[in-house]
Image 1 (cartoon, helix red, strand yellow):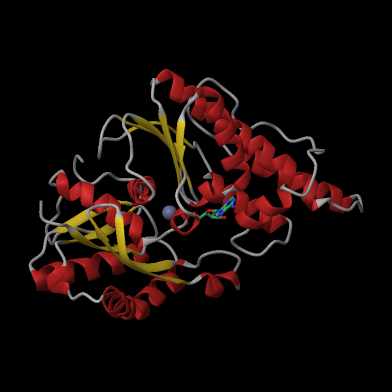
Image 2 (cartoon, helix red, strand yellow; image 1 turned 60 degrees about the horizontal axis):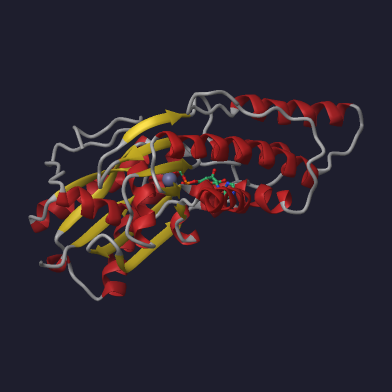
Length: 337
Ligand code: KG4
Ligand code: ZN
């Protein structure tokens, strides 16, 4: 079979990224231009600033990518792009770039859902084995998804309020840890002890999650201690918080694995970089003889390589868009993939 080269674009939040992926698993080249240093000054991503930076960066990233890959646009089979969900102004820049490349080259345009990209980041490690359960944990999402085969998705649960990564970042903020604080909370959690009294987030029989309760509990606890003139032990608070969150994520995931009778788990999204989560899930999967896969650290947070991997399987399934494709900020599915 002829090799398929997907040129992929990701601009849903504050990373301008492009990648060329061969046959859904081989990374030819990737460029990620992160705006974190800009947004750090504001304590979070400022949408308008993000889209302006995407505009400035997008052609630079494309030129750098083609140079790095030693390829030109004629060598590409198709163009894949994140159409949503994400920040609308940011998404539009990537979608417009993809449509332009598709129009100029006559190559097919493939719309990729951002979360599907995160799941297929695992296919850059090793070929996904079906059926599987995917636990998607990122700054914008917390979901459990059942996949019986490639490019088939059944959402079985999701967060009812905040995403887990968002909750990590808010906890970090109240502890004066710079944005994005998730990785630092994870580090501190490995130093401290589980001493604080925090609730388990939505410990019920569904596959849904809720993190706003534990987030408020942490914020209230910190404010109360400050008012009483007490010092917060950041390490201990991070350990307690992470233990509660990881316990519930692991518990619900393991229950889904049993109920759906799968032998493979993939963990995806920015929070899949979390060491505490990796340790606990690996330990449980080992006990139950479940094969678990985590993306390489560089593929955990937003990047276009994962969009190129997903784009390949979309292309195999005939999922393409015409030039009316537009960005979708909310969790909308493109047609019926
Ligand atoms: O997937 P991602 O890059 O963006 C979205 O699609 O939302 O995820 C970013 C999120 C941020 O909230 C960041 O704090 C969190 O992932 N994150 C972590 C860790 N590394 C990144 N959260 C907890 N522990 C980590 N080690
Ligand atoms: Zn993401």
